[in-house]
Image 1 (cartoon, rainbow, N blue to C red):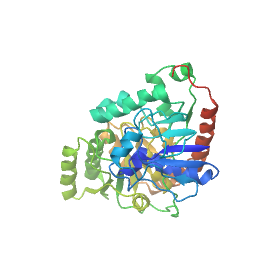
Image 2: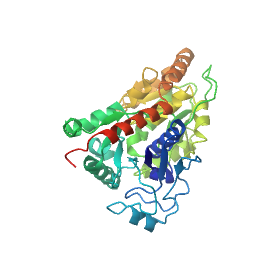
Image 3: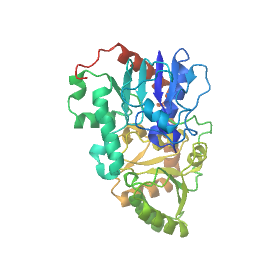
Image 4: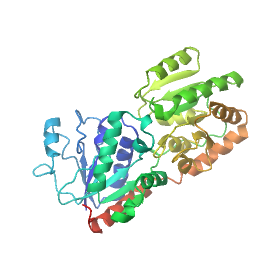
Length: 379
């Protein structure tokens, strides 16, 4: 089987979609050396100015047929109908990961649905991003031969907005959860040695940093330890006032803003932190929760959307609208070392349920199912 795989979002500073594509293709190549993989560094309407940061894999069954194209050349390649003649081999199946759903003649198309927050919570995204995600998903309803959901909640939300569509069209679908980036080689923490709280995620409204900072100030008023907060995440949209507040709290010693943190530095942050604070309003999956648990880092998480799927019984769940509840959870965890140790151990156990090799095998089996399935009569 020749698999065309979209890695367009890995060519920029990677957020959740980019990390998904990078981690999944690496796992696919590891578990399926008998298949051929073509990595597409431009995909559909996602044309990169530079592909230098993009995922590359040194393996005899992996090729990057579009990586040397100029943006203008790439745009021509992805014009409808898509024609790879002279540029790339004909794939049997193409996996779309960046909210693009182009049809390639002769190939089946699998489309990853991360979430439908652009319908469920449009206030948490820019209009440009909302339109990109919506148009890509609507195109997928026409072009995709199969859908992959990254959480059960994402599938439920999809069916809430499009009731009966999957059953009516007969399109195959599957839930294949994410897994941590890399594997923790650190020993499990035996004591609550971390000396800071950690938050991971870009500065944008959906991540709920304003309420988190309210909780941090309440916590500082009552704590005897007064651990500071470290924030690892790029500057997102509509974050000017938030950045100003972070700078102000930083001058008082409450917050250290680290900006976008490369993946090779995240393990150290997770393993040395006291706990992860993740009161997000909406997540398709919630990768920082899983990655923190991999390093034995307890998690205080929002109780919304997919996050209980990820955290299981290992996380502390809070109402993301209630700063006092978040602060109380922080104080409870801080003042009970035995509780901290128990949740550190539970976090390691919970994170072991998620594995990229397992997800890759499920994905490969799904590719075969899609290839064998009849095309939808709605196309």
